[in-house]
Length: 558
Image 1 (cartoon, one colour):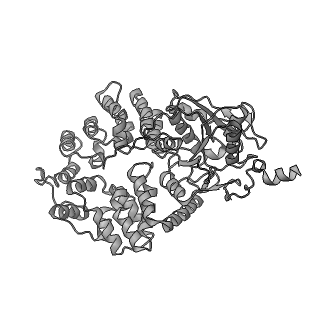
Image 2: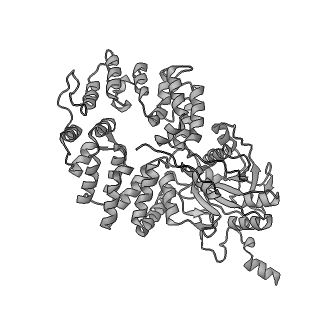
């Protein structure tokens, strides 16, 4: 009789390959049964992680189709909340790339409900902050709806921003991905607000009739004159004037003719007022021409900017952008092309620190952590937010953020349960290995540490089972995963419940999702379990508030 009760009613006997009784579980792409996240979690995951690169178990096309289905459901459920979520995540700089937000906003702008469509278009400038974003939005929305009056007015309103700001935008971002301002303006039928706007839009569509040697008397149009003047300079004799144009009219790199971009004096002039994001993107080039060199003034300037946490956050510099920049800069050559350089230590170290500073500040919680890194084979496939970074490598980098904040933690990686493993489950070649990570390690060393482990089947219940077997006191389990768990003989949420009951600790579970799928190991009916999105810049704050320690809200530039 006891066997009947155990086999049927005891949830701890249900393997992950079967659904728990009385739980609304779904089968994930690996064949295991997990919980489906709600539409709003799916929306957040998509906005931050996107679907580029797919995952080990799902192609990019299938993952995108699944996400679009989730977006449609969230939009239908509450269109205003949908748009507000898109705006909040985009404007706060919580996502590495803005394309998912632009795609989602285009979906809302194409909604059949006039009030939702109008609301989405009214928020266009909040999400499409630069012309590159505007062009991407137009590409997306054109595939979803026609250019009716509402869309024309919404896009035309983008060009009504202050004339001096518009002039900078028009000059810096003239065209991207097959779109130019003349294309957008002809579709939107934009009407200028006044003479300055009229002159700027005329230039964007038809160009400048003639350029003299004297700057334009109108301060709004003077930068456009400088841009056109730069095009006429001779590379052999015009470097000095090019430097003057940059200094006097704040010309960005995009306004400098290509032939001048090997001149160290030109780059020095550009660096003086260069936005932080552009600076990080051009570190390799500035080093290759000798501007950034050991002990140089330019290196000092770059180092000071990278060390200014407030500047980084106000600029919306995302942690993943810094992580990629640090990885590329440290290797001394780009992902494409033939450009090479000798990395300068101060810049390498500055990027390392900047990675951590780009996350929202979170106070030390003083809690006891168990960090479980899913470094299985599935985590080596796909890309995080459209970058070359795999979910496995991302898990190591994110764990370092917690390790540099907290004092009490244990960290282990999911392995195949043999050889160096310190604890194994009951089969499927699944186990845990304590990882030799420390907060003093470089990001590169941390990533390398998790790259050559013997991988097995993914069992996300292992951290709780391991802690219970060791009688280890844990307040917070953090599992970095794609939630494609399938190999265990007990479900993760049941393992957490058993740990709580037997240890007498009301432990919490935070699941850090690293792929924008619809799955989670966290039981949505358990208030002690939380889903967060990996590489959301607000993750440390969200985690600390869930644990019980509030964090301050950062200040952003408009």
